[in-house]
Image 1 (cartoon, rainbow, N blue to C red):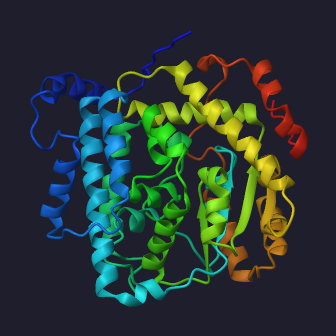
Image 2 (image 1 turned 90 degrees about the vertical axis):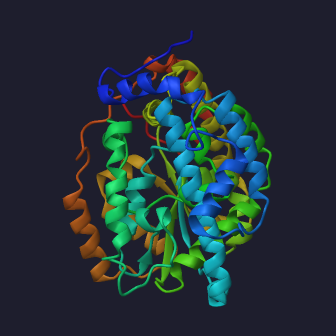
Length: 416
């Protein structure tokens, strides 16, 4: 059954803008065009630079732009956002290359024992990332520095950088684009950002399939060798830590689960935290979150199709989680399992177990900072995220059967 949906509480102003703007799409100027040359030329003109570095990103950009035009059903505002964000990413890429050429020491930076949080989405990865980032010894990429990475941040001005205010102002647009966003996901200029926002600069990223309906791009991206993407990721971290180091990077993205072999090729000493949650809650919550994201950019959401995308992707993810845990050898010492309900019941107990497993020091300062964070950020602080499988035409009994292998292997406690 096909279900098209538009949330009742969606911004009336956004609807009005999209309605008025439809007439501009066919006859729009360069600020409306989603072709490769227009975007590249605009980025070069805005920065005065012309070296994008490794040209392999161009194939991804070309395929993604075609999918935007033929599949994503972008609204007027969605088209403007895609155009603007693509130019921002290209600008950043130009500046990153220029910074690296101007400061060769960036390339000498070493990333030691980074800690990656991954697992099925909506299983506590964002919460755990933010919690672990409170440790003064840890370095997590913050939203502002991922959105505006050049020039490289400096330790002395890290908490007062003007880009923090700029980013906070830009994030306010989410209230218009996605009125429900704050309820489903924590975001702030000073909060940790996940790794797909870094890899978006390479245009080979799981960002795009989440925020837009782009099945041809998704199929193409699935076939890619992901090692070059993680090489770019490492370059980005080198850039951020050059003048603002930390003892250890703490990083996060559910999509790391889909490319763990490539991640470990680039970061062979990585510590991997795998989060687990009842897949029925994961599917419903993830489908709802994806709907919230896409409604900011398209007036046409097929809920049943969206749910199938989510289910297929994370059935694959669940299978990979089992596969990685069944593998023999050194990897097993690099993995630690975190169950969502256990994390919620006693976050600090789980933190101590993570530190003990990876032989990390949990200082008194870190514990104090984490306790303070927990007090300031209780569950549902920004409202309750409500969702169900049925609203996305998913049958609970069928999905329970489909994911039983994952539930049994990890001994996951069902929710409700």
